[in-house]
Every structure is written in C-alpha cells, then in structure tokens.
Image (cartoon, rainbow, N blue to C red; front, side, top):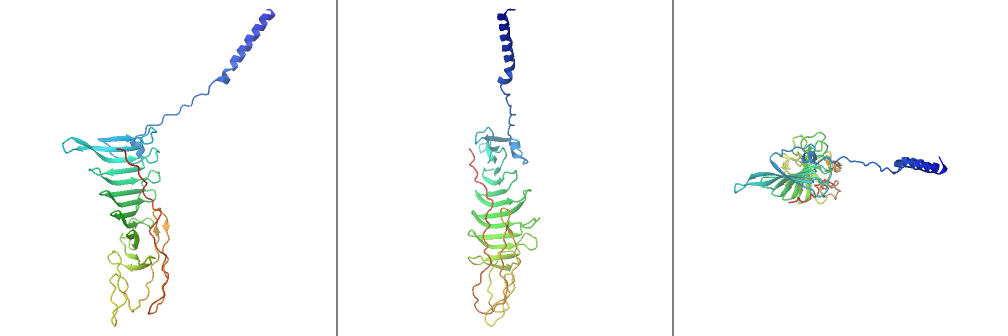
Length: 313
C-alpha cells in the first residue's frame, strides 16, 4: 500500500470515529408526555354531595375558558300551559375559584324563584353558610362552625333587616342558649337560656346609648319590659310584673348582676363578656352618675356570603 492510500484510509477511519461519537452529543432530549387531565364531571366536582339528576337537563358554562365547566344549571321538564313541556331551573352549581370543585349551590322552587343558597366560604368542601329566601328577600342565614356542618348560629331578618341572632355557645350544645334582639339595626337586648330548653330565661336589656344592661327574669321568655320601681306615697311596694324582685323601699337595693355569659362571634371566637357593676349599698335620693358596664355592640367579623357572580342565561 502506497503512502497516498494510507492517508486516504486514515481519513476514513477518523471520519467514522467522529460519526460514532456524534449522536451522543446531538441527540435531542426525550419529550415529557403529561398525562391528560381527567374530564371534569358534575359528579366529581360535587365531592361528597349527591343529587338525583335523572331525567334532568344539565347545561354547562366555562366562564374562564380553561376547558373546564365552572357553572352547571340543572333543569327539569314540566308541563306548560299549552300542554307542551317547558324547562324550569331547579338548581345551579358554581365553582367560584376555578379549582374544579363546587363552592356554591342555588336552589329554586317550581316557579324558578331562588329559595336557598349553600356556600363553602373557605373552599374546604364543607358548607359554611346557608341563606334562605322568601319572596326574593333574605329571611334566615345559618352558619356552621367546625367540621361536621352542624348549624350553630342563626340570623333572622324581617323586610331585609336583622332582628334576631340565636347562638349555640356551649360545648356540645344542641339548642341555642344565647339570643340577641335588634331594633333598627342596633342591639336592644341579650337573652340567655339557663335550663337548656332552647328559650331565653334571663334578659339583659340595653337602656341607653351606652347599652348598659339591666337583668330581669322573664316568666314567658318574651322581651323584657319596664316597670316603676317606686311605690305610691304611703303605700307598699307593688309586686313586679316582669318576674323580677319587687322593691321593698322607695329606693330599691341593686340586684346582683348574674355571672357574665360569654357569647360567640360569627367567626367562632369568644366575644368578651360584659363587665358587671359591683352591687353596693345605696341611700335614698339622687345618686351621682356611675359608669355603666362595658357597652355591648353587635358582633363583628361575621362571615358573610361572598358576592356571587350572575348566572349566564
């Protein structure tokens, strides 16, 4: 083999060696194939809640255009006035934070009017607030506290105005034991159930702008009433008409204030109990103004329903 042939053979071997090593450097990385996202159905979005959708018409809406429905509207067919079936909205279910789980349920009557809402405010899959409607107005709000979805706070409304709050504040309680009455949106009185029958036995009434409390024991559990504490001249003290202790002198001794009963805020915390004014001897005649107990104001921090988006038509 001459020198020219040897050079040609060497170049060929070098080229083959470079080609053999080249694929390890120029080979593209393997593609990562993500598993397809499972199809979202109404049943999976509901979690543990079950409804009978047999013979129902279900319409879906994707509000954020991510490919998953966010609103489901469930209709049922009923005979119309002309005998032809018509679709009546029965229920709407909404995913408010787009996490593929239902957070708000709306229920409608046979006329298509909203009668109840149930909301998961903290997106943990449990109902926190239920709102009941009559004639398009809120009449009751029910709040659950804890993990069993049991109702522990009730707020009642008349003509859209708050008039009463009932609470279960005792550990393991089954019936309300604390009651707050409102007039004109302001706290007027607080009642306490002492015997566990779910009805107020003792009322603390707000008497002035400071909402100083005057305890009185009610015989029928109704709102507290006022009665004159000074008997007629030369006469004896008349018996109390509101179940309290009748006065025995023109200036009655102060009644002992019952032990403060803590109330529960809407967010589950305990509100500070009012500081009672200590009882002491009094003398006839006008007394200097004494500071009253700590004012009681309506509970704040209540979890209110979120602003719900309008349903698509």
